[in-house]
Length: 349
Ligand SMILES: Cc1cc2nc3c(=O)[nH]c(=O)nc-3n(C[C@H](O)[C@H](O)[C@H](O)COP(=O)(O)O)c2cc1C
Image 1 (cartoon, rainbow, N blue to C red):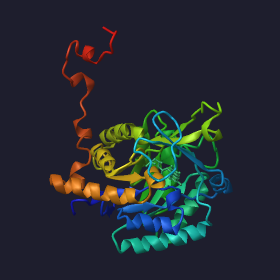
Image 2: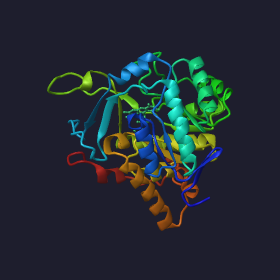
Image 3: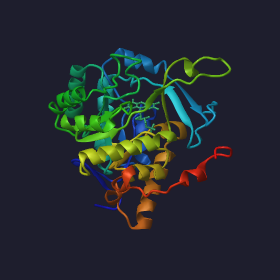
Image 4: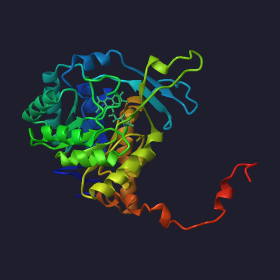
């Protein structure tokens, strides 16, 4: 293993930076740009069998907001603390054409030790199983199966936000029983127990668990007194990183250090990739930051991870979970009577 290599079940990634799925990888050009940035893998824009999911893409809209919830310009230089609020749809391309492109680029990517990963978002389970078979038959080496989009409650039957552990196991089992390629289960963050969902996905045979999906939000605008972009929105930002790290660390404690976890949600830089790895991620996906700031974000992240590891004489596999494994229970922390007063605002004491 080189210093930056990381293992996700049966596969080795040359570095832990993965370009996550989204509109930036809708096209062959986008997938190639992600590969050219030097990532270990890129996940293609997701497909499913419904026309409604395709139609949603023609209803997409995106807003970037600053810390005061005011709109920012869309100029590909979003500050790292910007919030991205949007609604999204799925790949509009014909499924066969999508499979052909993904398989061809994955075969090319193998020559540079990279992966182009296929991605299905669950609508109907039988249809997902059928698509998984075709993805494997085309030679695509890894499948990411997203059962935890933020939009399930807004678009029932079109995409899914699976929150019941028994159902998660059943869904993942159905796909894993059909294909032999690694299946990575991408699960929601909108759960009271993401670690239990991760366990459920592993019980179903998922080789890795990708956690976690974004949250639904609604942002009233003061001038129009209407919801931003007219509706409920998938909402994300750098502010999500602590929650992602929390659930990575909980999932690691629950599943053990060998269960491959892929972290995502809130990553805006290479430093953030490292933070998620210290929390337990074996590899890390970046999505919104590529959409808002371009493919250079990925190249920068690969370099930052490389520099950090070589400066410290560390390895990617060595740092996985290092912070998570030092989390102390509250009761084990030293008592400091009256210490809280140092933090109290004027007038409180
Ligand atoms: C505009 C947009 C489109 C997305 N499309 C997909 C998709 O097709 N499939 C999928 O699995 N996730 C999709 N996602 C979710 C991202 O892959 C990712 O899970 C999420 O945005 C959190 O990571 P981030 O903070 O790096 O963006 C999309 C996200 C955004 C913002």
